Amino acid sequence: MRFKKPKPLPGKKPTAIRLPFAAEKPAEGTTVLLAEMPGPVIRGQEKHAPDICCGKCGHVLILGMSRKRISDIVIRCFACQSYNYLGDPSPN
Image (cartoon, rainbow, N blue to C red; front, side, top):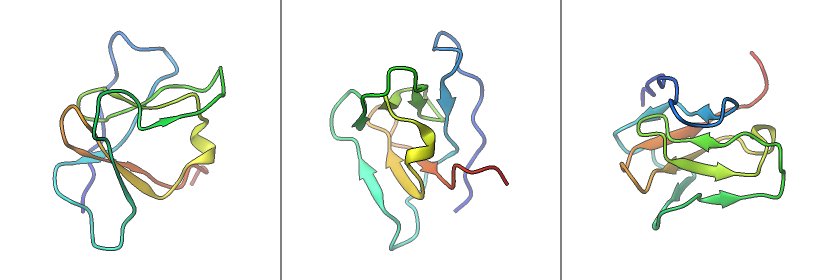
């Protein structure tokens, strides 16, 4: 599956992270979190963590959790139904 690079997020926190996304379903065996209602899929307690947003529409998917704590999952956005990839957070 090819994930598209997201565009910048107007109107969000300057630290907001926009995820790579794809319209098609990921390969079998991939962990996918399905957002079934509005609001973040994951809520943490880290006050200074950036918002992690859908790469296609900008909907907040993860709030209050550092990007370093989450990896190798896909989140389906409630708002636009696109699949957002959280790969390895460490630098290449």
